[in-house]
Length: 129
Image: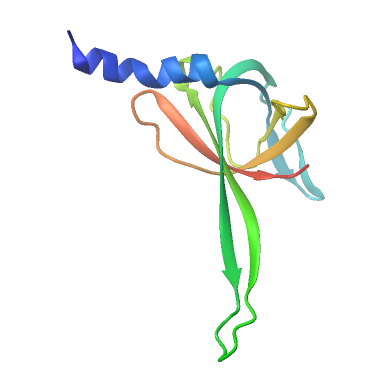
């Protein structure tokens, strides 16, 4: 049994089983804000592994009787196999996915990425609608 081969195939197996079809709209910064990038094509039908990690954050509370405000924030990431992509998304691009339960479209903007490791690239997302 080749454990290295099995370990290297796990990301693609989880993306196949748990991944979602997404559409990636390339964007560029313009004078009036972000606009569609005509130099790159819209990527459709790609499977990405989408993860949301809700976190409870605290603001304030440094006084003797703390009145801390707690807010829930959701930090989302998505990963793709580089071999599946025609061009690699960039910071500012918009990713649209259908919510798994309701089917309503959700829009996210890429605001950061990690260096590609093992043929997989990971992006941090911010929800915009």
